[in-house]
Image (cartoon, rainbow, N blue to C red; front, top):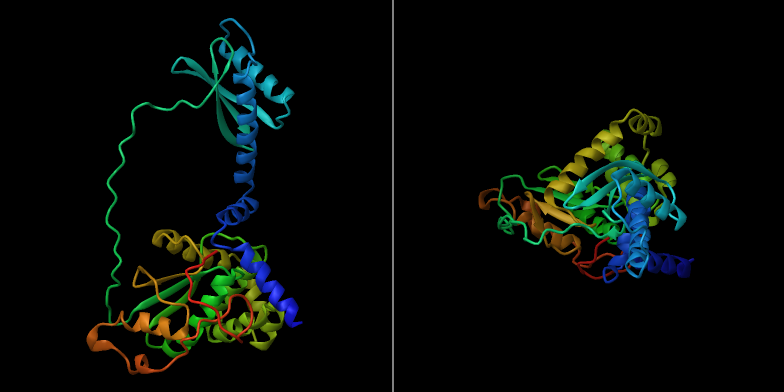
Length: 326
């Protein structure tokens, strides 16, 4: 069983390997059918475009907008592209822009007036780029700091961070505003089921949330942990069915995008991204430094573990305080 657990952790680590961004991108494509269809169409278009430049001319003389769109549709269909419909046609910069509909999305293609495929129309003058505002990196101090850890429920590095964050939450939950939130996207299949569960427990059965989370981080057994933490499953399911779960998750998503969260885990303290390590001691230190000098509580003097937890499931062993994210 121990070997299976190690293998499971290794597989999940590969899924979120920070040195292989293609894995991360493919997971997003998998969960976004529109993105997938767009990429497929782009690949087909590129192949057809290259074949056109290598001698494939549709016709020779000047053609009308209607003829251009119909001939382009026939050319793509004959070449294997399926599911295209003509939406509209207009003359633009001396060529015809044919706006195809593909899975409900408008996809513009360009044809010269003598019936040749053309590339995208790119302006020769560079557009003005507004000056970027300086990013605040100093965490402001307040009398009651707010620490928000953004994660995905099945991201190995997110679970690692939660295991370091949880002891700090138990210590500081009544004297600081500490919360686990969810990023605005999914990358692992169970997350679309598990996230509504956790967000409903967090918001509507908050006194049992940390017990459930501690159990869940041990083995990833959601069904067993619902029982162990004495979760009212009828209430939880009502929360999911009546739309409350979606509302709670939307609040997290809006904050995630507002803060510019780009990975799980991301720690935000008083509205600013924190680089605190993923062990309990580092999280406590990061939070306590956000108190004003006159309001630092005695709990900030507590000694918590400075060993970084392991990614994924299990409370035994230790990992590393890397910056890896999903």
